[in-house]
Length: 357
Image (cartoon, rainbow, N blue to C red; front, side, top):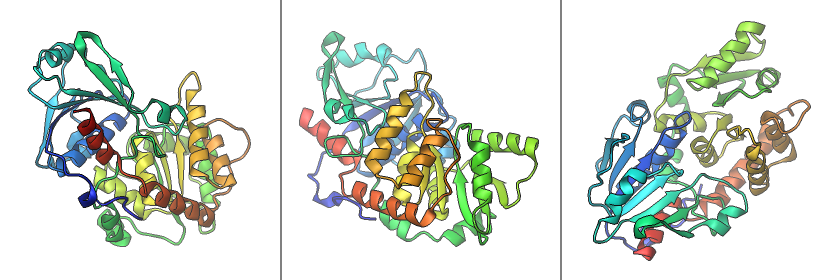
């Protein structure tokens, strides 16, 4: 994997004070994205405060807090905001109690709204647009994305080297896992209607499949199905404990096939360069269908992999295609190389703030 433009070729930016606000809404994804952004900023010498309404997941997600990051419990009565240069509102989480404090500053902080990730066309059109707000403040919309003209994807410095140095067998052994002769797959999902069909399909692969279940809803969903049907011949299932962010990366790197969901795990699976199946967050108005279609077009996945995505996400009927892992792996490596050639999100965000200032 190429790592994009090296950081030492980017214009030097003076360290800034950043306040990142996060509300944990669904299964830790908001916290995961927010923490990765904070860690990347801190690694570049910036001072970061992460205000999060549920800090508990960080105890296992990021047990070691690096220098440069302070974690603050964001409560409903938090209205005072210490002096800062940049305020990042993640996913429109709402900063109303702090707006007056921001406006009273002799120089109000730059206000960034970090939006959800999508490959849809509106992202490039909307990225970077200002939105005048009350009390003389301006909020700037920052859209992550998969193409030039968007805010890019989170990718920390040194990721490619860390991946090259990774010893999958040693990592599996350290976690009490033994690599068999069949396919090794990871499952991080909601509860797709096609889950049982997916389990049978994995079991039918040559030499079978060892499926590693992420803690939480993935494990609960599979265990509930197997309690009804009994064990499936050819399928070995192992429930994993909660993994910190580095070890979740290692899980994706160690497997031959990764089922992921939401935003943070999708990006990490793309950097893994392994075949992936993504489950979009289900929405009652079916808005996730357009999001999935756009992603499939952007990644230019093989027809069988695209169809698997449609059935897995409830957008098409019929059987799940048989995973064609060699073909899917070539597509994954091509997508990773294309995305890694773009400037990462944190570098672009710093430049964006510099430009506004």
